[in-house]
Length: 188
Image 1: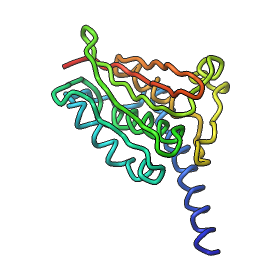
Image 2: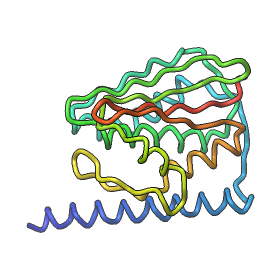
Image 3: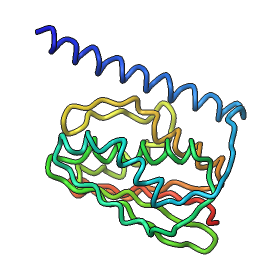
């Protein structure tokens, strides 16, 4: 019984910590106090680092994550912001993918930008839900397929950080078929 309650306390504390961290980062971005230090990033390595951090959650749900980003794909970005963006998108994909699902991360060149896409075969979203994702106060934090909770601020934060990095975030989704979140960064 103590172990069970300890797990509840841990999950609750982790959720509050994530919320506070997101709020602080969002406040820094909004007030122009976010320090942006663009450097040349190997996007395959950045994606793999994010997968390594989050893979335990995927393993628990028997989800396979495939890093199909080109090994020599370079972009300009702030390392901390790009890490946060990737972890947020991959974490959301895990959260909304059912047991034994698949997440695939790909890359492609778009003129002077590179695009990274995180695609899952999860629960997907309606057009109405997509329309509310990036509007503060309208977005809702949905419960994941294994009852995971979130703050509802992660995607708004990703969009704001990408704006600071001269990139963009877009989403394609279909109910019961999955979602693809794609973002761009200037290529190096």
